[in-house]
Length: 152
Ligand SMILES: O=C[C@H](O)[C@H](O)COP(=O)(O)O
Image (cartoon, rainbow, N blue to C red; front, side):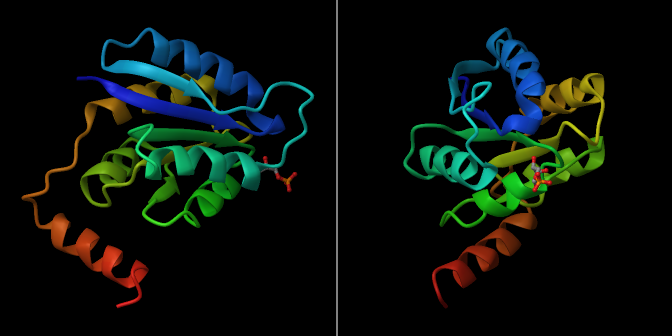
């Protein structure tokens, strides 16, 4: 079964969202793309959009999230406030790989004001090709991270 991807942006990244959404919709590894906003002129700030998208993942309505803003940082910081969500900016190929394989993160955040669209498209395609291995040594570290979240 393919991924259900929620995609969202703020006003600074509407163009990238449109392009990357089309790529995702045409990718055979993706079953469903959910657009969590924003549209042009809506004027909703990134914390609200990021949390809305991240909650779709924690509620089980999406598997992964692609969140876009000027730098990606505000989206990642906001998404990380939703319990169970691990999100980061990753603007290079190795980081995108480790975001999945080391951190088992559900959310990739990218910045329209930081990287070019062709790099963004390539990174998103690579991102879909990576899977977390629960039997890898990284699993212990992700479990430790989760234990702090539950207040241990
Ligand atoms: O991380 C925040 C984003 O880059 C956002 O798109 C722009 O935020 P700012 O207008 O506060 O710089």
